Image (cartoon, rainbow, N blue to C red):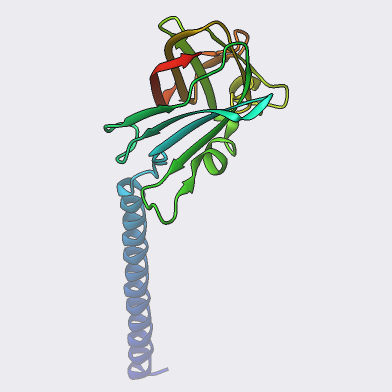
Length: 212
């Protein structure tokens, strides 16, 4: 083999090696950039946060078990949600000695033409994360119990959606309803209910409620 042929082969080998090294360097650089971009993307992307459901309209409707025309309705309207201003109203009065079934309505009526049913679409679907508590004050003679067919809520306690109320002697006072989200502990043994921890999705007190 002459010197020219040997030099030509050597040049071809060096050329191939040079291109191979360049290609390898380009591949490694691209891989490093991709890894860096992915890492930065993972670090910079904020974690998804579940927003609290907006609640604008809360209605408690009490119907006398023995007289369907005997109805007490308590309404609370908070156009900007439960952290904003609200207006409460009580229509009707309880009849002394009567028993009432309570029906709840909890809505997001930010769009009045298309209100969202927060009670059924959010609270009941995630009942194990919620718990209703009730309270009476100011001297009103009202007692309540959670119905046997009530839904299981936090800590397997009855959620407080299906309840029965009994009006005692003539009196006037206040009725409070709270909805607790993710309570650390819940207890329905005293019927009105009690909790530890958690956050309040709603906390409403209706005043000047009457038993006649």
